[in-house]
Image (cartoon, rainbow, N blue to C red; front, side):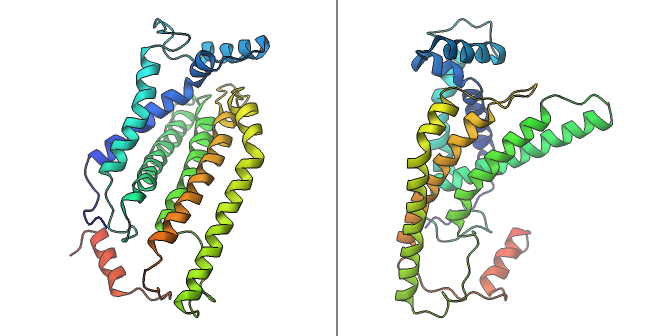
Length: 280
């Protein structure tokens, strides 16, 4: 268990840098598709190529190969590097689940990325409100971008909630059972989560990855972001990670002492609240 708590500047900068690089790679995903996985159908190839030509942020840069330029390549390579760096530097905040381990670092970093996305989402909404009601010059992209970011936040927050054990649970029967029965309940719950994730991915991956991602389906508006092409694959990715995290939680909590759940905060919770607000 790691004792150091969060709060350093690097825990803000790495998630923001990760969001920038991942966002660039997602926006330029047609370049990677056209270069490494080109469509055999000429009509579909031309459709995805037209989307890329319309959305290319750096059209004046000479491609290194195919449609990929130097910025596309560097940002794509930085995504896993920043993810590993973020997972290695993440620290537990005072209000977060105390008994976490090294295997939880990935979920914790995704939680930090989700928090930064909330900040960006709020900034986009405030910017749109200012332009619309103060300058009377509303944008064509803020509403769709807000929906897009909100979808990422909703899906990614599920993994963080699972790691924090903060998802909705009903303890009425669980609390009155002996520890060995509680472990049995935990096993049944984990098996159900894994089964749900497996059948969801098994039944949907072809439709999602071939018809949405590979064809790079967009939203069909003036801004036309690739919401279907990105959020639907993310559903399958995140539900798979949630299932993995559920298994890790089961292993981590196997020998834990039984918890007593009531509405009265214990002394540890009171002290955590005081630390969170800066009191000793």
